[in-house]
Length: 539
Image: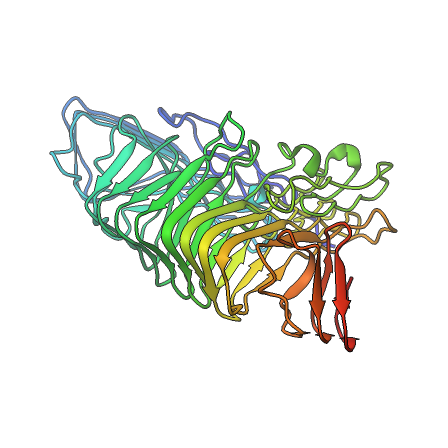
């Protein structure tokens, strides 16, 4: 096996690594430290430098100010250097140029450099944003990993106020930056169209407030803790909207809101992401009149739940020696573990929680997020994915499946619709993670629209019973999804709870290509005719 590369500590965005990443350092508000070099003195790229501009009058930038990290210089193991620092202090800011602190790219087995830090302190920008553009993107790397903390991350941008935020962001104004503002905690607009900009707003409690429609369009990635829209929200043409949770100190409190008066629509190849807080477990709430996920559109919380650090009982810990996370089902124990298993089940079938992460030893996958929807109508022809992330290294445990909690009047959709809360895979020394929890409360879903469900445990190290990972749970408000013939992969590795029903009666029952068991104590299935199980699993 080829030797793996380690990156040195990165300026802001964590460096990408096949072993250990670089760590963040420096000030968001006054960055004055250079970037770090990538691994191997003769192979890794140098970090970006420091640029500090002080002017009592005007700073005019029509060209480029760059503190980029250097790409790897030789060998597949060379790591990229992290971005450096740019600090500008002036009375008036003008110009339409670029300011960059990008990370350098790594070799095929080397890590990518994280983005650097940019801060611009100004008293005025002439009443309107002058057109300056910023870029703190991480480098690229040939080394692929699914573990977020082991991938190169964007750097930071600090601005004196929110003048850069306008209703029509020009393409490329913000590229892979985490933006913080000295003043201003809202973005008030009549309507908003974001395209060809990629940024996260890091100011805690920040809110986009639109009195009209919001469109997240082509090549756009907007990441905010709160979005309030008095019209409709459209995520389209490959756009990505993420709502991330701030931590909370109250039980059952939401860490962010996506509140839309009319419709939320996610079109083909477009994504709405929900990120639960990685250690606190708080999650955002989605509230709208209608939530519509088109075929090949995605509502995702994949790997956006708990890390190992804050998972409590549902996380696999180092003490459990390479164990995997648990949620609806228990996670698997790892190699050499003397404990009863991995992460423990948490929550209840009717109250899903956040998926726990895999063990910290090596590179455990993060658990899936908790997605909560309150709407009049939910229309699902695409995918809701809260799967836990798989391990990223030889000793990493998988992250547990997350949770989906939907409350609506009408549930509709198509057979292409899928809600998945699978556990992440572990390595050969770490077991797979437990499946998550899905709970659907609706008044009507008749006839059943064909929506499918999956809460499979992850795979990994083989363990004897009762140490293997378990599947997750599915709660449905009634028996609309049950039929005499179940051969459409409707239920895949789920423990099923159906309202308050004590049992289910059928004249005949034919189960193929489905795998489920009823979870309620004393639940009785009565079949007066033939029962056939072919290519499925039923209990």
